[in-house]
Length: 411
Ligand SMILES: [Zn+2]
Image (cartoon, rainbow, N blue to C red):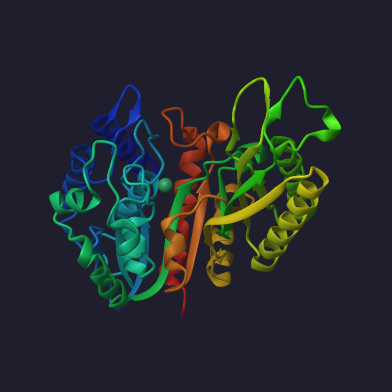
């Protein structure tokens, strides 16, 4: 029972919704609907049924003796050719928590939520269902979205009984819950727990993100005829800046707090082997858990790019692509999570979450904590994604213990 059941459920779901290339539970599509129908059949064995809110999120409730509610959430949708644990891990452990309290009347109510379209793999807007429920979704920013096949988001939602213009009504559903806590177990999708050989870790919050596009403009010139001192090479300015950004990440990383800076894209013009690049565009993605540190990292990056641009006789312009504030989790829940992880695994490493999760959307509304499970090779979003079974078992045990602790904790 317990962890063994969860693993059996996960294998069954993977078998039903994967091909040789991995999980295919793309949100709003037929295999995702199959996954949800399969989940409903599991609920039926517990005499429970789910209800769908206005944003397509699926909720199931086990009534307790009070309306104070502990929510366990994650997502059944996957990217194309995705892994067997991303998202489904958190939903399946929620199912196990329902089984754990079956036939009893727990002191608080339990809800398990399967958020709709966490991945954003089809329409490029992640956290769609949870952001609608939390009130941070701006419909005007997504109403024009279409998938690769030209199907609009509006139509895809409609096929699933969801009206884009009414998704915000899911806020009422969330607000009506007398929430005591939101808990989420997720595979780490990074190498930290594996490197420390730890089955589970306590997540202290999700990183804030500053994402910008930098455009360096110099002068395109012939590679043979233009002497080095006379060049205005936009690529070299961008490349030097990228190295400076790595130094900024090193400077602000402390033993207690890791930060990151990433240049993920680079494009040069004219893009010819015999031309000095006149234009170079790079992206910069900066992440930190402390808002003041993130602001300082951004200021340092701007200053470095301006200095380097001027040293290279080029100009640089910054354009913000996207940003989000850091979302620190609840200190009291972090302590309970730490107790649970330590009791099961002997140790309780703390780590921030670099990727965003639905949990981040719940932070403004209720106390939140996440637990991460060991991730083999730190590989996410692919069929190789895995947590070896002994680690998986421990992570489930720790999370179910956390659920019990939170359910029984005094407010
Ligand atoms: Zn996920």
